[in-house]
Length: 153
Image 1 (cartoon, rainbow, N blue to C red):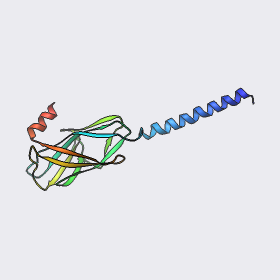
Image 2: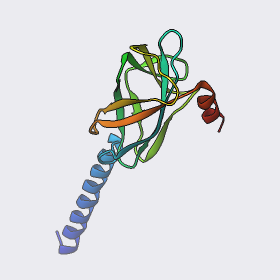
Image 3: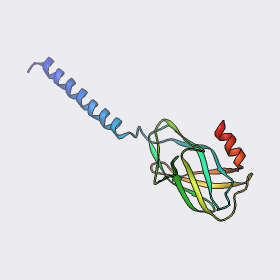
Image 4: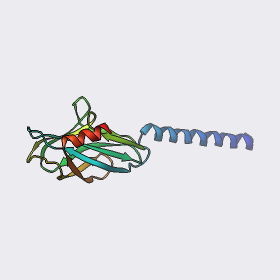
């Protein structure tokens, strides 16, 4: 085997190895560690049956993650719901993307509230992710009219 042939074989092997590494990384969908920030968190005033819905914007400037649970002070039951009101055990938070929880779409359902939620008040919320550290935020309680106005905007 000549020196040129040996170098050619080495180059082919290195390129093949890089291809395997690239394929493995891109197939995992992670794209590195997630970089989560949460903004515009609000809940609707509670209904007469003691429930409410929470909405927010989750921005992820890193790799993919999943929202696994939401803890909201004073809510006996907290569930992630899709637009069809089907409970979900987790919410995909895609990497390098924005995930909107908005009226008429995916949202967090708060039930068995200890006290009514009145417009102008706030509630503490903790978001638990699969890969990211917990995120603590404050949700503003909005009237139905205010929630509808945000949905129309």
